[in-house]
Image (tube, rainbow, N blue to C red):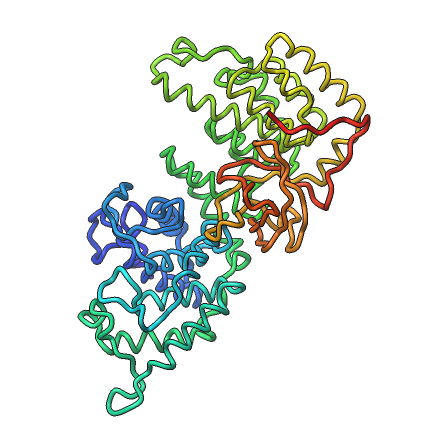
Length: 496
């Protein structure tokens, strides 16, 4: 185990030999992960540096749609082929690292559900179905459990049991000749060994779940943040905070508020605000009043605004991103102080910043008072006064609304085209069968129902199939059948 850990490539994967080649082979890496898992089962603890390398490797070799590349020498994935054997192998890796319930893993499992084992589907090359694919696919689906495993198990067992050799010296084996690639390299021994392992999956491993890895992954992220200096690698780690148990994520986020870069501090504050942690709201207000990098006073951005020595276009884009994170963080907080701050920004902001403020107010309150009037800049003061009046008349209401509103981001659309994954789950009170209403950027409320819930994510379907939100959209979920009513008979308008 120590030998394997010591010969990991700098990019986080493994190659065919111990030399540093900067070639990261997904297939070899998958087998190494199984070896490390076996070591864990008998008490050997994987060094956090090894797990961190795997996290970086998976981030580089996995596309946003869930597909996985074969062999990388750099972070450039162009020209590398993909197949479902590689995808299922990396899905196993995510499960063993404690990331088996994140939306990307769910999407990968959905892809495998469209390619069940079948004897006629065995191909003559490594790009199609192979015994190798069936092995990793079986292990990954077994770990996923419901609803993936029953259907995969049915196809897997039927395919293998009906095609086992029944006569002569081949009896009890499986013919590898339908898969020329495996026949050339492993022959009948390989095809039979993988098939038997598939049929033993029920008792070879305990199901790997997020809960079983709760103590390991947070430590890996925490230790890596203390050592890593590369901004791109640190971003991978900060993004992982969404998928950690809330208490562990809050602990790490609080540390970033003290030691992180400006971008990391903003991300940490927004995460804490979504957890209703007062430290997040306090940090967001400090960014509003004390950070020169954030231009929340709606002054036009020009090259003269950029810090000396920076590349103007890159700096302006970064500043705009941070502005939106601060604004949405205030929406997550949802308290009267945060909403009041958004109202004041409504009268100052312009362009994309104004759109973000409008959306944040809509997410926090479910209302779009006077938004159409903001097209006329001279009427902005009147809109602000209207909002101030609403806030005064509904004093105390926001606390009740906040308790029933959950803020989430659409992580990705499901392959079925009829549902999508959110980046919140049971840790935030989401449960199977929950009905609710989603408010999204387009301003059209959508009735939704939760299909499946995991610790930090959930799969949701919408009553209006043509109105699904898109990946990356921020949404508000109101728990229960109806939004919380406001006082004063305030009209609820779609955001414009």
